[in-house]
Length: 133
Image 1: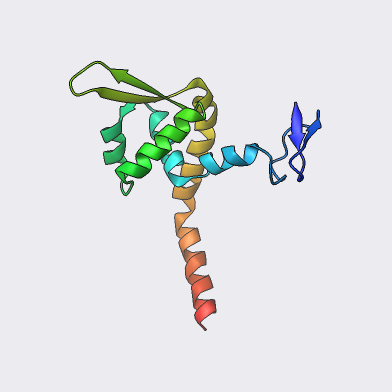
Image 2: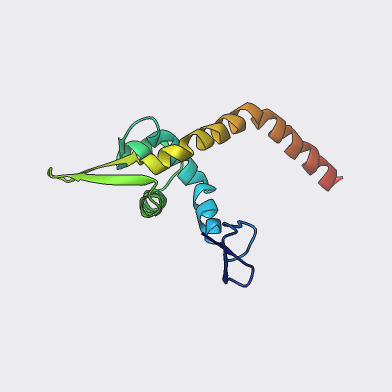
Protein backbone atom coordinates (compact mmCIF):
# COMPACT_ATOMS: atom_id res chain seq x y z
CA UNK A 1 0.00 0.00 0.00
CA UNK A 2 1.25 3.49 -0.79
CA UNK A 3 0.55 6.81 0.82
CA UNK A 4 0.46 10.09 -1.02
CA UNK A 5 2.87 12.86 -0.20
CA UNK A 6 2.02 16.54 -0.68
CA UNK A 7 4.12 16.40 -3.87
CA UNK A 8 1.74 13.78 -5.25
CA UNK A 9 4.34 11.04 -5.38
CA UNK A 10 3.47 7.74 -3.78
CA UNK A 11 5.53 6.82 -0.74
CA UNK A 12 5.85 3.14 0.19
CA UNK A 13 3.96 1.31 2.95
CA UNK A 14 2.66 4.19 5.06
CA UNK A 15 -0.99 4.06 4.00
CA UNK A 16 -3.31 6.77 2.75
CA UNK A 17 -2.98 10.23 4.24
CA UNK A 18 -6.16 12.25 3.79
CA UNK A 19 -4.31 15.41 4.83
CA UNK A 20 -1.96 15.16 1.84
CA UNK A 21 -3.35 17.34 -0.94
CA UNK A 22 -3.14 14.80 -3.74
CA UNK A 23 -4.14 11.71 -1.79
CA UNK A 24 -6.99 9.91 -3.60
CA UNK A 25 -8.87 9.48 -0.32
CA UNK A 26 -9.79 13.17 -0.62
CA UNK A 27 -11.96 12.26 -3.59
CA UNK A 28 -13.79 9.69 -1.49
CA UNK A 29 -14.35 12.22 1.30
CA UNK A 30 -15.65 14.74 -1.23
CA UNK A 31 -18.18 12.19 -2.43
CA UNK A 32 -19.41 10.95 0.93
CA UNK A 33 -19.37 14.46 2.39
CA UNK A 34 -21.84 15.66 -0.23
CA UNK A 35 -25.30 16.23 1.25
CA UNK A 36 -27.09 14.50 -1.62
CA UNK A 37 -24.82 11.45 -1.41
CA UNK A 38 -25.44 11.16 2.33
CA UNK A 39 -29.20 11.35 1.82
CA UNK A 40 -29.20 8.84 -1.06
CA UNK A 41 -27.04 6.35 0.86
CA UNK A 42 -29.24 6.73 3.92
CA UNK A 43 -32.37 5.84 1.98
CA UNK A 44 -30.81 3.01 0.00
CA UNK A 45 -29.47 1.43 3.19
CA UNK A 46 -33.10 0.68 4.04
CA UNK A 47 -34.16 -0.84 0.72
CA UNK A 48 -33.64 -0.50 -3.04
CA UNK A 49 -35.48 2.36 -4.70
CA UNK A 50 -36.28 3.63 -8.15
CA UNK A 51 -35.07 7.00 -9.35
CA UNK A 52 -38.41 8.76 -8.94
CA UNK A 53 -38.89 7.27 -5.47
CA UNK A 54 -35.58 8.81 -4.42
CA UNK A 55 -36.51 12.10 -6.04
CA UNK A 56 -39.82 12.25 -4.17
CA UNK A 57 -38.30 11.28 -0.83
CA UNK A 58 -35.35 13.68 -0.99
CA UNK A 59 -37.05 17.05 -1.08
CA UNK A 60 -35.15 19.74 -2.93
CA UNK A 61 -32.92 17.54 -5.08
CA UNK A 62 -33.15 18.26 -8.80
CA UNK A 63 -33.38 15.49 -11.37
CA UNK A 64 -29.95 16.49 -12.71
CA UNK A 65 -28.29 16.49 -9.27
CA UNK A 66 -29.84 13.16 -8.29
CA UNK A 67 -28.70 11.62 -11.56
CA UNK A 68 -25.15 12.93 -11.09
CA UNK A 69 -25.07 11.75 -7.48
CA UNK A 70 -26.26 8.25 -8.37
CA UNK A 71 -23.72 7.96 -11.21
CA UNK A 72 -20.90 9.06 -8.91
CA UNK A 73 -21.94 6.67 -6.16
CA UNK A 74 -22.21 3.86 -8.70
CA UNK A 75 -18.75 4.68 -10.07
CA UNK A 76 -17.34 4.56 -6.53
CA UNK A 77 -18.89 1.14 -5.94
CA UNK A 78 -21.29 2.35 -3.24
CA UNK A 79 -24.51 1.98 -5.25
CA UNK A 80 -25.56 -0.47 -7.94
CA UNK A 81 -27.98 0.17 -10.77
CA UNK A 82 -30.23 -2.54 -12.19
CA UNK A 83 -32.31 -1.98 -15.33
CA UNK A 84 -35.39 -4.09 -15.98
CA UNK A 85 -36.60 -4.87 -19.51
CA UNK A 86 -39.94 -3.11 -19.25
CA UNK A 87 -41.57 -0.39 -21.32
CA UNK A 88 -40.56 2.14 -20.27
CA UNK A 89 -37.34 0.80 -18.79
CA UNK A 90 -37.46 0.49 -15.01
CA UNK A 91 -34.25 1.21 -13.11
CA UNK A 92 -33.68 0.33 -9.48
CA UNK A 93 -30.83 1.49 -7.28
CA UNK A 94 -29.51 -0.40 -4.29
CA UNK A 95 -26.65 -0.06 -1.86
CA UNK A 96 -23.69 -2.37 -2.43
CA UNK A 97 -21.81 -4.35 0.22
CA UNK A 98 -19.16 -1.61 0.14
CA UNK A 99 -21.88 1.02 0.56
CA UNK A 100 -23.25 -0.90 3.53
CA UNK A 101 -19.90 -0.52 5.28
CA UNK A 102 -20.54 3.23 5.14
CA UNK A 103 -24.24 3.08 6.06
CA UNK A 104 -23.75 3.14 9.84
CA UNK A 105 -21.54 6.22 9.58
CA UNK A 106 -24.07 7.96 7.34
CA UNK A 107 -26.86 7.08 9.76
CA UNK A 108 -24.81 8.42 12.67
CA UNK A 109 -24.31 11.72 10.81
CA UNK A 110 -28.04 11.95 10.14
CA UNK A 111 -28.83 11.19 13.75
CA UNK A 112 -26.33 13.74 15.01
CA UNK A 113 -27.75 16.44 12.72
CA UNK A 114 -31.32 15.71 13.83
CA UNK A 115 -30.36 15.59 17.52
CA UNK A 116 -28.29 18.78 17.52
CA UNK A 117 -30.12 21.04 15.06
CA UNK A 118 -31.50 23.27 17.83
CA UNK A 119 -28.02 23.81 19.27
CA UNK A 120 -26.54 24.56 15.86
CA UNK A 121 -29.30 27.05 15.05
CA UNK A 122 -28.82 28.74 18.44
CA UNK A 123 -25.07 29.00 17.83
CA UNK A 124 -25.71 30.52 14.39
CA UNK A 125 -28.11 33.09 15.85
CA UNK A 126 -25.59 33.96 18.57
CA UNK A 127 -22.82 34.35 16.00
CA UNK A 128 -24.98 36.47 13.69
CA UNK A 129 -26.02 38.73 16.58
CA UNK A 130 -22.38 39.33 17.51
CA UNK A 131 -21.40 39.91 13.87
CA UNK A 132 -24.04 42.62 13.39
CA UNK A 133 -23.47 44.33 16.76
